[in-house]
Length: 106
Length: 116
Image (tube, rainbow over all chains, first blue to last red; front, side, top):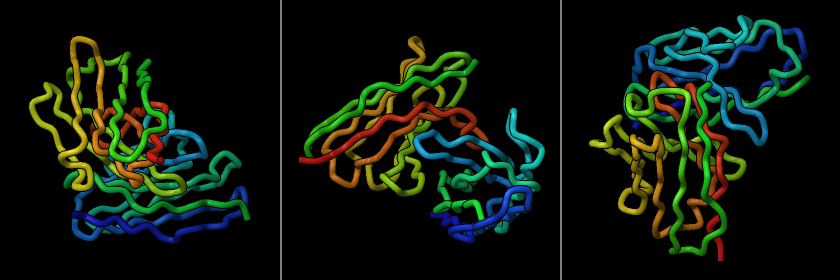
């Protein structure tokens, strides 16, 4: 099983600042990686797929990068609605999720 | 507009059974793999099962193999998850999702609570 490890577990950032979230795969997954945003009581929302492609309707301040085993989600200028939990997911071999990064208001 | 509307769920005793359903609309259901994903209270996301477009292949996470069965009816655009021999650790919100390069569409989620 491919294990996905996200860091940090919690990130505190001020509105308007940049946030950088990391995700590491236990083996190479090429670019078969997605990022999701989840708010309390809601289903996850797909932000990024194929490591760097923005999903429909996702603002340009969200960007993804990386390939192989190291991936990054960057939010360029945090808005109030961006404070949530973020998950990465690999779909190279079955489907496994990272444990999540909570993005808090500083 | 793509919609996945879930039904079923609720409180069940350990060892009991429950069936979840997911009604799809707004896309050609028979052309997509479909998945069930769950989230235990306060925890992260876990893929549970998925099924091929024509229903000919099914895959499960090890912890539910032999207890859960995923199925679909392409004529009715519906996806089901039959859950038997339920355990306390199956307590979670269950989501159906349209499979692909990531899950682009999700159901609203339904809570399953396994408790005596």
